[in-house]
Image (tube, rainbow, N blue to C red):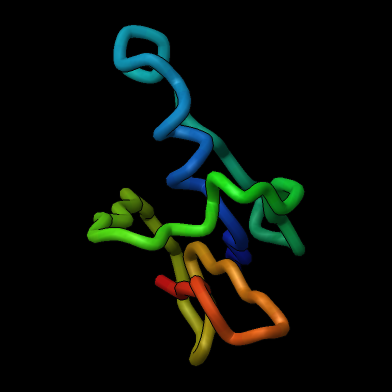
Amino acid sequence: MRLINKYIPFILLFLSTSFSQDYSINFDGNNDYILIPDHNQLDLTENYTIEAWIFPESFTWLAGIVSKYQTSGANGYLL
């Protein structure tokens, strides 16, 4: 199972288009994730789109692609 967790689209969002065209993130399928520390710019308060291109070889129930949680319950999201 591939565990892709937290904020991958935001990594791509902050990279320039020319830089990100020829790069990807490759996981071996064993407890892999990217962790980005919390920052107020990740609190999306207006309309937004979250997008991810993935190629899972298998997928389990409740396996998230990207997520952001706050204890207050505000401004969180899960894909």
